[in-house]
Image (tube, rainbow, N blue to C red):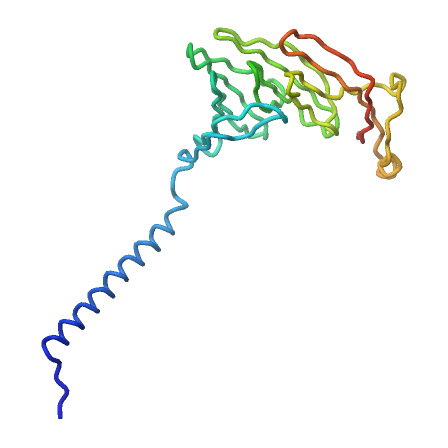
Length: 222
């Protein structure tokens, strides 16, 4: 006896087939979205609590404008950073309240190292042991360089909670009044490195005063 579908059964199978077709379309749409997700323009990437620069610097909003250009937005000013072909950075700052723009000089390789309390820091050069640091001050209308110094990478600079910038300045061994603990000294010498010394400095960004402390470290230098 031939098998015949009742009207109710035919309706049931029609509903099942329709549901399967809809599900297939949704799956294809999801696959297509997954494949194209990587094509979303990078300029849409935005973060509001990025940490950038030396320890103790302020948080900033982060926005990627292109693979080479990004911005850090603080409460009163915005930094636009452009990655150069040599690996260094071109730095421009905009005072948001006045619209004034300043281009930070970059005759040497420069790198943005964060901002705090109306100041920002620029790292200069690519030396592995001793670098230079420039401190800039920002007001509503002006940008000015207020301090420049060498520092040791062995103990990176940081901004203390009292607002002072702490760092180690390289000094000759003859100025070391308290020999620091240097357990890796022998290993450095075996690698044909030299042993350098640094003294703790504190820079007061408000009063622009400098304090030298009787704290010393040793560091490997090429």
